[in-house]
Amino acid sequence: MKVKRGMVAWITVAFTVLMAGSAQAEESIRVTYAGSMGVVMDKALGPAFAGANHVQYQGQGEGAYGMARLLASRKIVADVFVSITPGPMQILKQAGLIDQAVPVASTSMVIAYSPHSAFAKALAASRAGGANPWWKVLQSPGLRFGRTDPEIDPQGQNIIFTLMLAQRYYGQPELARQVLGDIENPQQVFADGGLLTRLEAGQVDASSGYESAVISAGLPYIELPDEINLSNPSYGKSWYDTVSFDLRDSAGKAQTLRPQPLVFYAAVLKNAPDPAEAKKFVDFALSGEGQALFKQNGYGPPKGAALP
Image 1 (cartoon, rainbow, N blue to C red):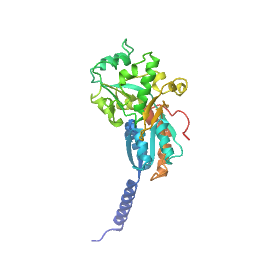
Image 2: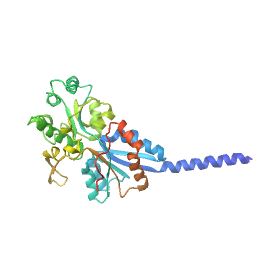
Image 3: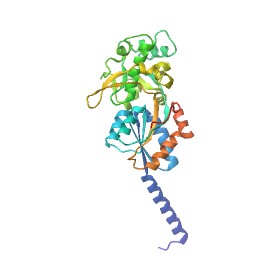
């Protein structure tokens, strides 16, 4: 069959474009992050970055300490890690996987609740300033409270700090134990990525939460004073540092934990498969567009300096 010259040229161009598109599709950016960031990472920042840079975005979330340990042990490999609080980044620093981590966003601790809960009306009334405060409602018989594992997730530690600060702030010495029970209470502890899903489904009545993640999920919540929500660095030494608790590490050694500011940090990993794209992703998170996406999903601006 005889093919006209113009048709040959069109086929050649189409093939070239097709091959170029296939090559681009093979490039990817792998981002690991604190499990509470699933919505903003997988539905906002990740897709926006992928579209602008013609790469595939692959995101994976888990409790930040658990994710840091997986990365440090080389059980998984990623380009970027985004964590809340400095602690998980310190694990990667000790493993020789990062040089620094930069703040990209911030948040505060809140009490989220299910709109389907039998206690929703009482919690909504407390939110509006009713006579029965939130910490009393959480002690109601039959109320199911959810939180994450303090061994692997900063949020699991932060709700303990929040309740310990609340008992000092409200002058209620047994408040934390009455709401949480033991530090490692198996009846309350759930995986980070599934906690708000359980709340949405009505499997728990109320839970700990970061304001950013709760807003992203569209759930009702109770704001807490700066003195207990861990959002205000100016309260760090004078107030937040007045509480602590002991938790055993993976080797069984007891360690004393203290609150850290609720700031999200991003770091490029030294074993990143694509370090150039990794740096571009962190820069994008700090750009005007990236910060707008964080804000739309309930996150506050970055606070503090980079972690050396």
